[in-house]
Image: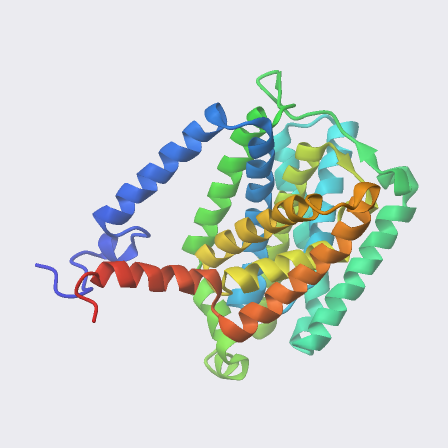
Length: 346
């Protein structure tokens, strides 16, 4: 007999979804995701693919910032590394898209390790500035290494192919992007049930104490940068296959701010927080387009929308830090607790 939250077996203790209710709703979610592309319009399929890509990248940043406590504003640059890797391999070698995605993650991982080297000596604002510097360096490389990257004109790549079928529509790409994102989420969720994930959390909570306990800080900080950058590289590769045009301007600094905002709004140090934050922040520009579209701006719509979007991102970061520092994930947990006790809640 189970008492409280005690588990009868090791397998039950290790299960990600340990109740019948959780497994039921997971099955419902899976059925919805499978049925969604058959009933959704092209616009909503486009948004679904974009949300999945952003979830993958935000999860990678959450590993670094939310779980390890290392602030980074270079996530977009690592996505750029992944996107250019995919474009170059696709154009020059025509290698399989899964191999290209793994190579994109590997190249971004190497970049992340190099950028993470200063993390042993600097932290907080200084580390964030060093990642910004890395972003500018990579942007310069993307824009000026013309024989490889195509310069400011960028690279256009053909669609990915599966069994000879081109994945050239949002409907077809959905079946590539969503499974890859789900695998990455499952990997991240299981990571923090291992010694490595717990070492990340220990470094975040008190790095000096973690080192005293025998955790080699440089090794685990570099590993955190590597894993985060791998996620960003794969997300960048998916992005390249989705849009099929890669330019230096595709991955600006504001995109890195977007991902930082996503994990703050969603809830740092939570896999669910990364998902909710990425979904929320992806939908914010679409809502802004509707709101701004109602205003009589005419051709000035695009000019107004860009700064308004940046202001809204900043306002959301400040607002959640002040009023709900644990983000949407904590709001969801409170809602679950309320209905779990209802109608006996006093």
